[in-house]
Image (cartoon, rainbow, N blue to C red; front, side, top):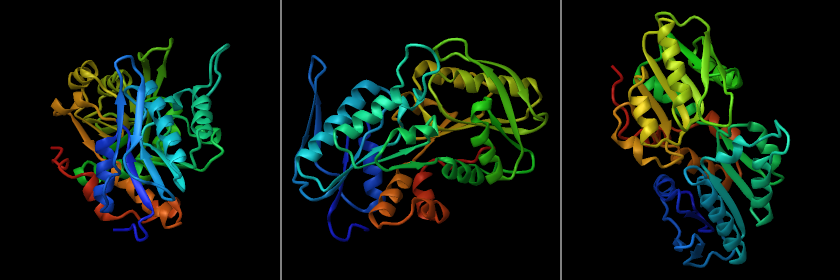
Length: 337
């Protein structure tokens, strides 16, 4: 148990209670006592049921399936902790969905990620921890410290333990925009990369993959991406890989925000196995034999330990513990054959 002085507490927002409990289990501590109530007309009320005066507070709240309510609730939590005289308040946002709104790429639109960052800081947050932002430059929208974690280490280690990392493996980026991060996956696993040529003609969740650039014939392929909502892009890429003669097709993602329709699309696709983390609670995936969810909570807990001990997050990634991986993969290590 790392909480030597008893000055730190982890609390859960309504979207991340299970995730926060896993963090506490890893750290050997208890979840803080709090509650969130949503009234019939939509108002959200939050309450802390214990004294947190002079404590370092971590509030865990993902912004994923119901982003507007979840974001508003997070603001109320930060305000409540500051008014209750917390020493510091760190917002742990496992998935920050508004990171997609990172630029003004057409006239008369909002830079939504910047608006969110301003709101979070205005209510008094001292630090933010998140994972695999869709646009890394969103870090620059915050003036407070932001620790940006990466799911790559978890996903690559899981691929190794599945036994699918070999000379026939190719990492596939669904589009040019993710190519740099896909190359990082490929370098870590020691394999080549292929890239999909994707176009999106509207503000919807439907993209068209026109071509696969790279040699995938007879190869086993892992499609990597930061998130999927509809399953459209990754299933399009999977069909394209099969058309190009690929052997087995897997998908490894940082976040999934899937409903029943999207899960059905993946189940009916050439994707043999989709692996993602539990940053967003998606009940629809639980009935699918093709989808496995590993936990990012131990990694976030390790980040809390590292921050509390005043050590470097970069060094944390250089020395990730076997126990962290074991707890992340608990119950999910079935053979891929």
